[in-house]
Image (cartoon, rainbow, N blue to C red; front, top):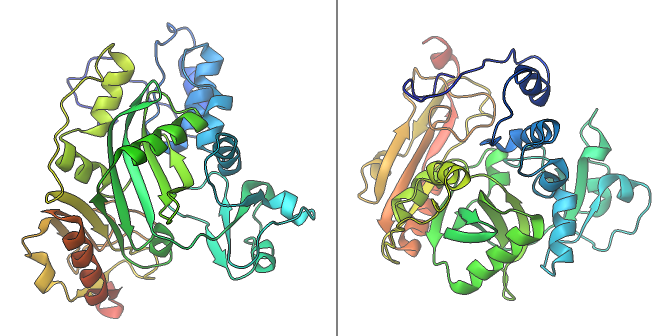
Length: 367
């Protein structure tokens, strides 16, 4: 409610926030005209929005349509049926019941509907992964998949009727799993050749993404990209900001226009060229064990001309104790560019190696 512009025309309905989102929204709509659209801008609201559409008979994706972008086994099933290369995988209940696991060695255990690598763990063997379910967790909510050793890319943009109309690829520096485990992460934009756009289109069609933002992740291999997962939303951290700097397109705005206005997907896209790429970086604070942190080693990076924006917590500013990519929650975050991909990649790696973030300890608790 606080972020809605006050001049925005419409009726604001505040729900209690006690029951399931779809239950409260459907109840709030009782006696009101059926909406033309139901839009979810959070990944965690996609299923709820689908259930609202279904209950109110509103056009758009219903729950069965949304599952391929929320359930990672259903997602990879769809990608594999479409002929895309995917990591070998198995639902955890099937693996625990004795189904053959068709790979050996490093294995990833992950929640079916997870995001931001929360709850994801990597093990050296399949057996260790099968025994690695967190205490009290429901096996039905997990899968296992083979570990793929390779750089991870993400491809972001807007699709209309299943076709990307604006698209930009990036390569991670560090990983989101590493971030969840306490290491800094970021990404830098790379070339987006026609072959990568074609692969992206195939991935979107496989999981049924039509008119939506998308955040697609895959592994780079000598034989081409391997599908990892895709979300019907814009990427977190600095993805949307760096995307807008490179293309001139503000993703949440163009999504709303594409959904609500016929022909609104036609807009100018800026091409900054290979020497004007952007990227983002962020340091986690959720594993520090302290609300306050001590940051060292930033002096030679903070004012570097390749830094577009730098956000750093002061000694008396708390950091979030839960995983977050938001600037206001973390010790350090920012945007880099414009510069060539290789230069930005090198800059982030040097910064990640030199900067340290530690718990401030007693001195901070006395602030």
